[in-house]
Length: 388
Image (tube, rainbow, N blue to C red):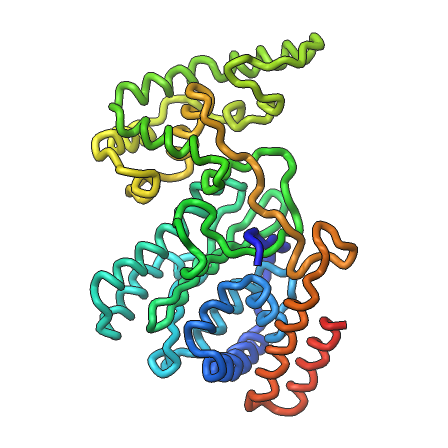
């Protein structure tokens, strides 16, 4: 799988009770068969695969391109294994809205019930929190995280499935993580699929991109200096951000396409600094004061600091870029079309081998489930149609 993000239409309705009950029942059968066939670690890995996750949701009869597939599928799977977690070796924590904020407590509870070493449980909680922070603060793409599920096995494999919403264009975006694929929690940690909608405006601050390496380095160095130094730089942006915007507009209106030498950016007219509110922010100043006092050793520690959020990350990033010339990435991390590619080879050809393999595995799993023949035939028809 390539790295990326999936985008779906935003649902406002509720899943009918009859459908949810059916998804729980079928989800229980599918989960038991898949774990018996491949083991709990592989099951977690498959849920971390956006294509597999999407396919499983479709098998369980939810709309393939609806945001509700994420929330309802994870809720159905969580309910389907309730009381059988120990036997299956798989544990699902978190969910939608307020339930997502209970994820750390649920992980801790399972750690105690399973008598896991304290360090292992703390590490799982940390990974859950950091994945949420990365997708809400380091990837500022206009999607607010409202769903977070953390799935782990007794052996320590873990996955994150979380989703954000953009109420302006009525879409939702899903982010997938898998433990074995992560070398760094900060730098491009996602396991992803394609997006139906990709922004081409260079307006997404992506501090998890490798292209933001220098910016992350300077941001860390800034908070390892002192509070007065950081605030001096912030004040420069506060005083001159509107002046920079006026200067660029003036040059463009008068046929001058050159940019300020220190910025060297043609696209600076759409730069987030132009829309940034550089008014006095006591909260931002308190967080910056805290960071300069604690002096995080690296960018991960900076991000993990309590209270650090999107505005803090953005402020440090803009100072690093505008004043110190350390570019950040503004490319949307969503790179590819949905699932296995497009039939017209846009943006890349369909991966028929992976596509067919996914369908075949699901077909075999359905055959082994203990559901009635009519339901099996319906599912096989949907899979056969997909295989086309």
